[in-house]
Figure 1 (cartoon, rainbow, N blue to C red):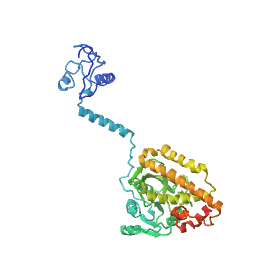
Figure 2: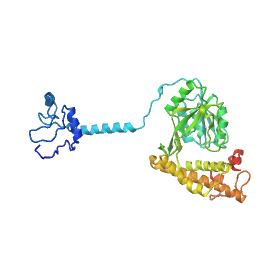
Figure 3: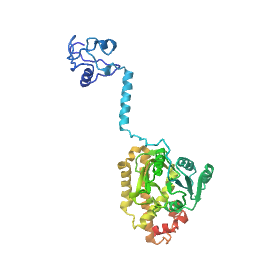
Figure 4: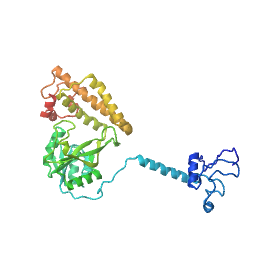
Length: 405
């Protein structure tokens, strides 16, 4: 290359690397200097070959002339493969790692036996998958049905190996507290029909029950939720709950909505793995389910002396959306995250506050009876409880009356 001529050599259309990278390549090849540009026949300091035998066998070396970086000696397709490998390593560096639990590939013998309790109602599409997921760890499968009419119990009987108990459903905590004492074995695992145990959770249960700690009465477990088939990794939905506990020690709190196991938190451990929760499969299911939840939530707030205000009706839903979508990372879940954050903020939060305001209006107008039932009809021509999907027997239950009073 003549003096003053710029170096435009490329390999397969690749531009030359920087001087720092070139000098580093020269040092790896045996040179010590930077290999500056010089006139014809002149070489930069440290640029001559020190391995003549290698020059004869390697086309990347030219006899007696300046040697380019090994990066330029790569063929274009090899350079692309190298780039892909580097990119994959970079992705794996920041990707969440899945740790294999010790002994997860082995079946640990359990010293204590386990009853898996499955509360259900009209869960024909979910019940079979749920039962199959709990069989590897369940010594007894107890299906507590609250009046299914869609063929759920027929599926359970066809599968076999399950014991069925039935009772009218009032609210979740009341129903589960009725079913827990009927478990045959001293440890109980509550699994809803739309949930699935994973291999890591099963392995963790086996290790816990192989040698139960006398200092622990219950165990937390994490969840991974799905909305309309989309996995929600953020959005504030992947929470923990106590699901494995001692039958004779633990019961649910007497609450209408989102009741937890009432146990000393110092005596609670943690299971490994996550339970898959296919919580919402359609908008009809969401509206029906959270219609009940908002009614019960409003009654609970009313029983605590809370009242609806302009701030709770207007500002709180917006703050709830910002909390879920921004602070809890709902935007990372794409359109599914946007929908669930908007539903939880502008349906769940707002409608609950609106029903709380409705209770206040009934109280002021004197149209609400002692049983919490309204003689007025809503916009759909039914009572507020009926619009929320709540049965007459549930509304007249002492617990519901006490909270609504």
